[in-house]
Length: 275
Image (cartoon, rainbow, N blue to C red; front, side):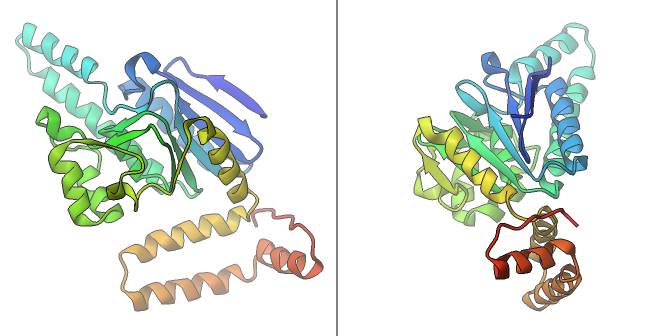
């Protein structure tokens, strides 16, 4: 481990080789998102995006939860204080947190480096919305995953209604959204979302091994491939194929592409440099 540190806002940042771990550490609040944590996590994502030494990100949670969504306790206090003062600032301030969360999800989704999620315990509401913006998800067998908004009579505000039907069959997404139920990680309804379900004791080691596998690949290839997948997702098949051809021709002249071919021919490990 090259570096480690926990921010006062509840985010622990660790760099292990070319993998950056971002671990939410607010266990007393089940890692719920408040304004300070959302801001800090956004800054950490921006720093990781800019750091050429980092090829892969891992998002994790400490304690009994991955993330239990927005900090409803804090939102409730804001609303009560506004009502006591006979003001209207509470709903507006509560809305700002939702907007901040939505902006965080967009930033997470747009990071050019692969993002893995290591899911322990509860991932509900905003926790599920974080997962929907990650590329690969490894979940502990005891993890419980759901949307949860229906249980409190609220609408999603950070992308669940838009992203969940794009990650799951629409009927499965509707079940999660309409019921608000939390499902075990190995439930068939989540099969298209969760890439690996592992024993609780193996969550960290399996996630770390997968992250290291990705980090051993060319960071330039990973970034270009992730961008290609995103741009082709809403394109027609013909347009997506044209985008792939254009990207392949451009990438063929890169150092990493030549190095990868040479290393394969010479039966040695490649020395990728991200250029």
